[in-house]
Image (cartoon, rainbow, N blue to C red):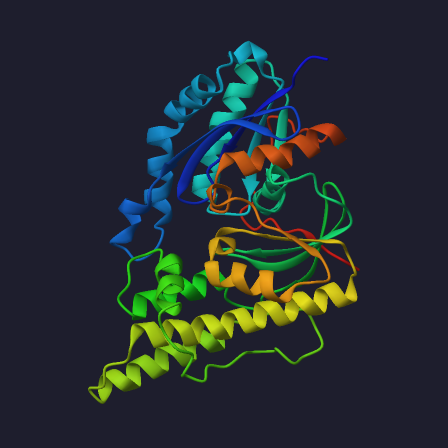
Length: 336
């Protein structure tokens, strides 16, 4: 049987990435051009800066991905691209490149939802068993997704305001940490004590919704009030208290989701899935399902995860025309 190769493109935020997937789950190359250094001084991603960086490096990423994979353009069977959600200008750069490449080489185009990419990054660990539950936690998303079969994603609960990764970055900025702050807060939390009583919003409510804006505000107010009084707070203890509040909520809602929708597999994915505190709590507390977390290199934004989601769309015959447009606010359907 002839091998199948899919080239995938990801540019939804501040990483330009191109990957090549062989058959169902073998990532041959996953080239990532990060822009973090350019955005650090702003304390967050500046959309226009992100778009310009994508334009500068995307053709090189295509070339490097094919070279690293050791294949020719003529070996490819399809081109996949993230079409949302994300920053519209950034997505459009990747889409323009992917469409032009597909058209020039007469290849079918596969549209991929960025969040499906995060979820399906778990396929590199092992072949997933369905139905499954997924906790997707990133800078822009916090949602529980029920996947009844490959490619069928339904939201069963999500945040009403801030995403968990966004809360990490905002409190990190208040503490004077460098963007993105998630990893540093995680490290500080392991050295500190949970001594500040931060709110755990909606933790007892009988739903699968999240809210992190109140926690963020409580943190900012505590820090601000201490500064006005001339007091110095320990970043270790602040981080430990903040992370404990976040993880208590994530764990409570995830357990509730597993009670409501009994499944054998729980996928935890997205940038925040790299958090060691979260990984420790999952290992200690989730016994009713097997927890599958993508490897660290596939937790952040990358085209490898997009290719793994694209393989499923290819099998289902889900292709798009060259009139495919970016959908910056793309969301999964809600489970009725």
